[in-house]
Length: 281
Image (cartoon, rainbow, N blue to C red; front, side):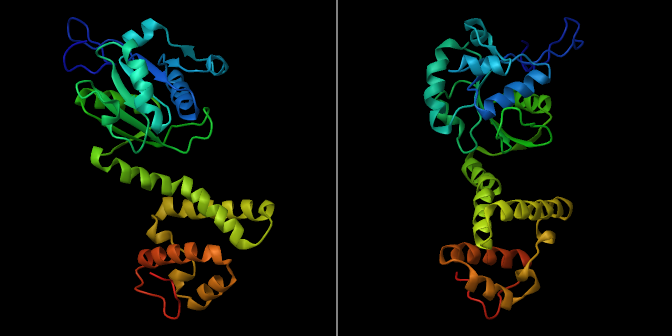
C-alpha cells in the first residue's frame, strides 16, 4: 500500500484508480453489534472474517470464520465486545495480528487508550443505533468515529459509507459525555416509557402500545420541526392546575421523575417558572 493511500483504494502503476478493493477486516465478537456490522459489510460487498466463541452462530449468519492468515493480513480488527472486555480481548488477539493492523473498538464511552498500544493505529467506530438483533439495518443512522491517525479516520469513514451510515466525529476527551447523551436518548427513554406506563395505572397490555404510538408521533414532530418547537403538554401551556393534579395522582415513587422532567421542560419552553407548582430544584 502506498504511503498516504487509503487502505481500500488501490492505484495502478500509471496512477489511475483501479476497481475499489475494500480493506481486509477481521471482526471480533458476534453479538448484536458485531453481527449487524459483519452482515452490513458483507451486504456491501466486503469480506469480513469473524472471530467468535460461537462458530455455530457464525454459520447461522453465514459469516466466515477468520483464519490465522486473515488475522495476520487484516488491515482493520474491529472489537465488538462489551466495554469491560475490550482491553482484555484485544491483548489476547493482538499476537495473531500483523504489525500494521489497526485496532478499532465499538464502545461509545471508551477512549483509544484502552488498547494500551500508543504506537499502533487505533480507532473507535460506535454505531449510534439501538441494535436489538444482528439483522437490524444500520443505513441512515449515525456512527461516532475517532482515530489517532488520519489515514485510519478515512478508512473508518469508508466503513460508514459501506454501511450507508452518517458520520459523527467525537473528540477523544468528550466520549464519555457523548455516550451519556446517547444512552439518555435510547435506553433511558425505554426506562422513561416504562415509568409512563406505570403512571397511567392501566394494564400494560393497553397502556404500552398506546404510549408507544404517542411517543412515535412526538418523535415525528421533533424530526420535522426540532425538539424545542415540538414540545407539548401542560408546561408549554402554563397549565399549573393540570400539573398539580398529575403530581397528586402519581405514585410517590414517580413524582421526583415527573418533577425533574418538568423542570427540563420549563427550560426548553423558555418559561422561568410555573406559578403555584412545586417542581423542586
